Structures are given as structure tokens and as C-alpha cells.
Amino acid sequence: MIKNVIHKKSIIAPLLMLSAMWIGFFMQNIGLIDHCDGSLIPLVPEGLKGVVFSPLLHGNLEHIAGNSVPIAVLFFMLFQFYPKLANQVLLWGWISTGLIVWLLPPMNFFGQEPVYSCIIGASGIVYLLAFFIFFSGIFRKDKTLLAVALVVALYYGSLIWGIFPEELFYQLDQPSKISWQAHLSGAVVGLALAIIFRKKHQEKKKRFIWEFPNYYSEKDDKLWQEYIQNHPEHFTEKPKLKKDDIWERLDEIRKK
Image 1 (cartoon, helix red, strand yellow):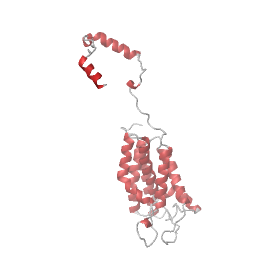
Image 2: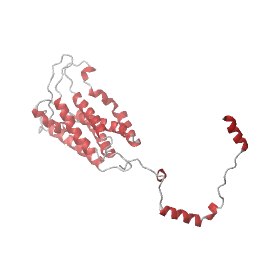
Image 3: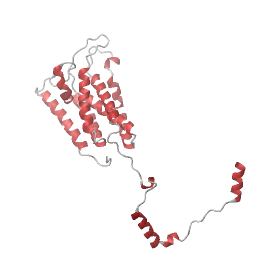
Image 4: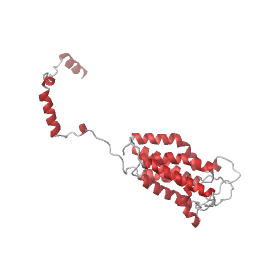
């Protein structure tokens, strides 16, 4: 991994994802996609297609605008700092997050009736990437990746509250429209993938020549001998053995 070079995919991937999201949103607004068409509906067979398509659909302009910035930043970080893992993380994370959400039934909080809702939005992918990048940086113990993890923690640390139902913090008249199930699923899958891939494609630690005690190079030895012959003045003064100081010796005996 070359950290001082921007990978092409780290620019192309966010642009492709954002394009797909905004094209999907445009198609929704002109009526080509109905509200629940392509959405993820838990435990409903027709809702399975939402595993693939729901992250590309959004309810309104505020919804898609709020997801666009973190998607762009986190996609860039994923493909820049984990180029060999990015495709696998995105593929398995996307599908796994969607399937877990589909398998979670609607839940009753504080007397509210469970409602089967159409889940759309890329927030599950946001949580997936944020948790993967954060924990991967910690597990790999690489200075650069730790710094990236710290940036994610600083800017997206408040995401942690999104994995809990809104009803735990506010008294709502109707069920929350925020899918905490998608947030929680993305967070769990992101952490799991960070654990699974923690040693895969890990950058090897650089070792310097002096770290190899038995290293010998005939070429280097010849260059050294030539230097000695061409610059004898640098070697006129031979190293002298330090003479024993009797008083220092006596001090050592007294200490004992």
C-alpha cells in the first residue's frame, strides 16, 4: 500500500456511488420508482430486492444530502487505505447488512404497534464503512491507519447513538422513521469484517539492513575497501584502547 499516492479507485468509487444514489433519487422524483419499489421490507419476500437497491433510494432531498457527504468521505478512505480489501468489504458488507435488516422483524416499543415499513437509504452502508475503517485501524496497529481511525472517530463518533431506537431517547407520537436496524446491522457487519480481515493484505513491516546480523554483500565490501584505499587519511589514527583508571576500579570494588 502506497500511502503518499492517491489511488484512482478512491476517486472513481465515491463518484460512482454518488451518481447511482442521485440517479435513483431522480427516478423516484419523476415517478419511475414508487416509494416502496426497490425498498427493503423486513420478512416480506418482495422486500428482498431492497438488499441490493435500497441504499440507492432516499425519501427526500435532506435524506440524500445527509448521506452523500459521509458516503463520499468513507468510500474515499476505504479505497485509498484498503485498496486490496475494498471490493470484498463493500460486496460482503452491502449484502450482509441488507440481509440482517430483512431478517429483523418490526419491534414494539412502549406500547406502539409494530409497523412493516419500507426501508431506504444509504445510512446502513455509512455505518458499515465507518465501523470497518475505525476498527481496522485499531486492529492493524499501523500509524497511518490509526490516524485514519481517529479521524473517523472524531467526525462520525456521534453515529454510535444511531444504533439505538429513537424511542429510547424521545417520546414520539408515532414510530420513528429512522431505521436503527440498518444502522445496527451496518455497525455489526463492519466490526465483523474488520476482525475477519485484520491480518489479510496487511502491509509488511520494513526491515533495515542493520537488522540482519548475518547480512553480507560482496559489492558493499568492495566499495568499502576502495574507499579505504582512496581515502587513507581518514584512517591514519587508529582507535586506542582506553586505559584503566585505578580510582574508578576502586570505586567499583567499594560499591560491591
